[in-house]
Length: 300
Image 1 (cartoon, rainbow, N blue to C red):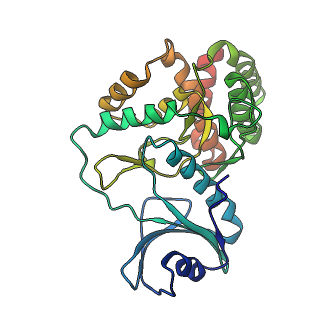
Image 2: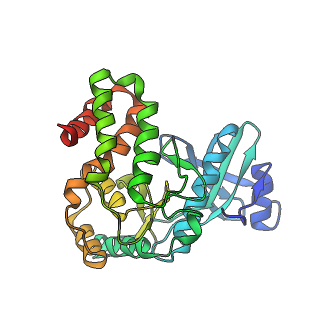
């Protein structure tokens, strides 16, 4: 989607293009926090600082899609994201170069501002991202390390059932016995009775948990590691509640700005079933019980 993002055949070539001259790397320090990629603070010999992610060369597409997602969020002008500088291959590795975000002190109303900023992002126009439908994205991408199907659909309920739940259920078939598989089939049939269409489509971060935002130099929340698509804004809010929830001020700021559709709490677990299924597919049996607990909640 981001045609302006140039792809390079070496990290040295990318750095030369960024700085306009041949600049060596004086420091490459590991940065903790991620479990998919290797991450580093990269300090150029002229003093410039960048954030570097590395993976195997055949995972370049993962970085391309991350860059597309960050650019989509940036274009809403609602909430900050790191600026992507370059991506490409370097020998046996692929890489993504971004500005290094110097973390600041949180503003007094950090979480309330975060909620309002996310609401503004959800209110942004989405027409350029979905092509022939109203929900989805111009290309498939990734949810964590899992492949995410974004083929557009005109209706949110159809999109969530066919492009979110169904692909994950198919990938996870080996974990389910016959009784469980039948319950999953019933849930897919009932999804239209549980979910509702949004007032308008929204650009979603897609993987909004506590590890995917940070405090920027302006004291406000910055988003990282997106799995973007256009969907129901409730899906983003539900994800924030999956692993313990954000502080109450976040929800106060968000719902004051965006409003709250009746019955959200009854739909929340179904939205998060997508993420639980993805975790089952990525990490195995530990998530089986959580998946089936949600399934039986809706199917009896």
